Length: 210
Ligand SMILES: C[S@@+](CC[C@H](N)C(=O)[O-])C[C@H]1O[C@@H](n2cnc3c(N)ncnc32)[C@H](O)[C@@H]1O
Image (tube, rainbow, N blue to C red; front, side):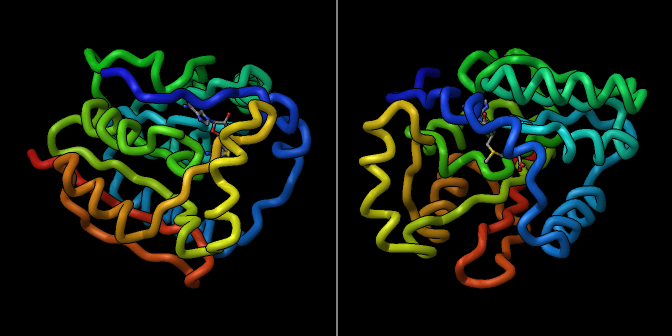
């Protein structure tokens, strides 16, 4: 299972310190997403967060499941997440310096999370198919994604330029409908989707049939 193009961690290592120190843009919406996720989790579950960044979300979900694995291809993000988990004494979280494409599909997870990640994958359709392979039958794929074609036609036009400059994040643009269609065609059933307003990221709960 190989993507047609791979993203680079350069930008994320460069901005890691600032990103980690920054405030959540919309705390109420973030908390709504956390609560909806936690309402789906089960104590016996193991979950995977791809592109975990600071690790805060993964650590917040840790008390609700047996095991959390967070991966990020930016080593500066992972080092921060590891040190926070240690400082906070959270024993059921492991953070690994890995990209999505480094993961084999021999292991699957009851929930796979990609939060602000799919629109950064040059081969986003491949990333959805990989999420499907990584999700256990009956499990959920939870994502929050900037659908740039709906949010800003101007940035959508600039997205190919971003991909041409390795120091910039590799943005891809699609609509919310494109995203939902792609998840359905990968095999997921869409259980819920919403965005707080038309310019916001779309939160999707997709289930892999049992
Ligand atoms: C916008 S940040 C989001 C971080 C976190 N999920 C959040 O919601 O705050 C994107 C993160 O995904 C990571 N990332 C992007 N593509 C990745 C990939 N293919 N594999 C692993 N990590 C990736 C970046 O290094 C960065 O930490």
